[in-house]
Length: 200
Image (cartoon, rainbow, N blue to C red; front, top):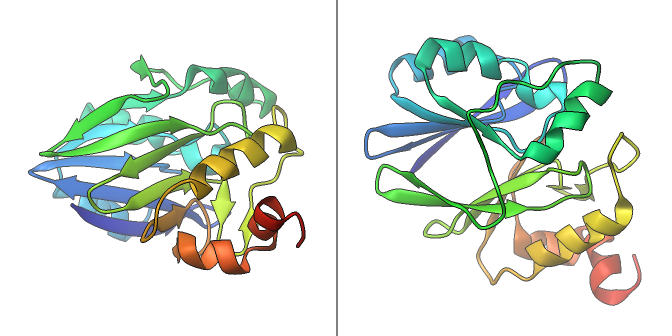
């Protein structure tokens, strides 16, 4: 599977375009760019996947959905998050749930429900490529904030512990900032070190 990253929107959100077997999925289109528009014009978009409902991850989702006829999918527990941010929930073609498998051109994305940053936060795992798209749950050197509506540090800690349960060699593709490796975050991320060792 080919993965293209586009930094979009006022908060420099990572939107990811996944290409496999003639099909494509777009994760977190919080904005657009000339490069993203060109890539989408050459792709057959099957899914628009939202890790969560904050505006910086969703602002162009309905535009791309209307243009491509792709299915817009997210966790239903994010509906209140849209309202809390002063926006109506985006039209949901089908709710996503923990453990689902989404076929994409001979590849597959595994859906994990990882609440904490928001109640319906999701991650998408490409197991064959040992890659996890984590939204705002985990960043290089940091973790997602929990002070927004629906956030919970206790839930986020459980979600981070679940990510830590993955084996060696996993690549982390976050909602903001550079990609990183889970092995590196285990060693250097102070929040994960505290979870693992009980100290920063």
